[in-house]
Each structure stands twice: as structure tokens, then as C-alpha cells.
Amino acid sequence: MFGQRPFVIGAAWPGMFINPSKGSRPLIEGWDGSETMIDKTVASLEEAVAGIFDGATVMIGGFGTAGQPAELIDALIAQGAKDLTIVNNNAGNGDIGLAALLNARRVKKIICSFPRQADSHVFDALYRAGEIELELVPQGNLAARIQAAGAGLGAIFTPTGYGTLLAEGKETREIDGKHYVLEYPIKADFALIKALKGDRWGNLIYRKAARNFGPIMATAAAVTIAQVSEIVPLGALDPEVIVTPGIFVQRVVAIGNAVAQAA
Image (tube, rainbow, N blue to C red):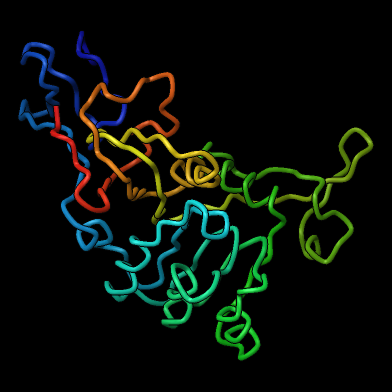
């Protein structure tokens, strides 16, 4: 059906193919023969968060403030989307980043593992006032449910939470003498993540523990938006160390002026 033209992993649109006859500069060819270059980079944070709509489910990477895409969150606040459902490990720290999004009253519900820390005063006040809904998920289950969404699974059975309040109203099953709880995937309309470097195809690498939830969230969202410290030319990232392949990323924006000349 596809002849001799190899399918492009990470192409911007389904049905786009590399045209090997056009030299070394990668082009993609559509069903109608039209050609365009794959380039998922955007020029500004404003452009990066464009289209995030009221009521959207948005995954935000980060473990506390480590790996949190603070600049994308600030852009989302300025963009104005409201009634959001946020998926994150925490519920904001201090007054910046995710906490600022909550404080702006843009979030109706948060799905997380650790909503309360010493500096979670913004969430605490909103929750006590009944202004935000909380879905508390054990951290392992949070990761597993996000991974399930990325893998296209319908549901998973996990032993975590069995016999506790977290399992109330959920299907349980005994498998090989062990009790499990049925959990459904957590998927999102958008994911905001932070990486160290990316290229215009959307391939990403991370810096140490800042990786945390970013790679799995990228697989579980319809649109993944990555902020990076540097956009590098194609080929600058060793394929052996790429963590998130470009197929899972739709937009890449550089923070500051660290944009290398695209190849």
C-alpha cells in the first residue's frame, strides 16, 4: 500500500512520508504529493499554548518544582483557559508555577498524589473553601494509569489501594490469590513538559531528575508541548539517549535565546 516510501516516525501529520529524492534536507510528502519540512518548533510561549481550551485536561510534568515547566504555566495563565483539570504529582509549591495557576482560579479539579506539603498553602486554602476538587491517586497508580493511557490500554489491575478508601466503588478481583483494584487510564488533551534539549522533529532529552513524569505524560496526551533550554539541529541528539521520540511531541519552544541553527 505504501510502496517504497518509509513512514516518518514523528511526522507532523498522519500519512506523511519522507521523500528520499529531495537531498539531505528532510522533507515530508503528503497523499497529494505536496511537500513540507517537519518543524514542530514554535516561536513563542504564547504560540505554544494556543488552543488550550476551557475545560481541558492538562498534564503538567514535574516532581514538586523539579522539571516543572514554569514558563509554559505562566503562558497558560496569560492565555486565560479556565475550568481546567490538572494532572500532576503535586498540587503546587509556594506561589509560582502550578500554585500560581491554582491561585488564578483556573483549575476546577486536580488529580495528584501529594496535594499537601509545607508550602502548599494555595491549594490548602482553595480546598478548604470548596473551590477545587481533588482526586487523590497513589503515586505508583498515577504513573501506571498515565502509562496505560499512553499504551492504549482499556484498564489495569493494581494491588495498590485494595481494602482502603481509595478502592471504594471500584471493581476488585482476585488473581493468583492476590487482590487487585481496577483502575482506568488517565489521558489528557494537553501535556506541558520540560526537557533539556529538543530538535525540530520533537525529539527530547532531559536533565537528571527533571525527567520524572515528562516522558510518560508525553505519550498520554493528544497534544504535547515541550519547553526546552535549547533547540539543536537534527542529528545533534544521539538516538541512543533520546528519551521522548518526536512522535509523541507536537510543539517545542525554547526558553530564552538558546536556539541553534536548524539543520
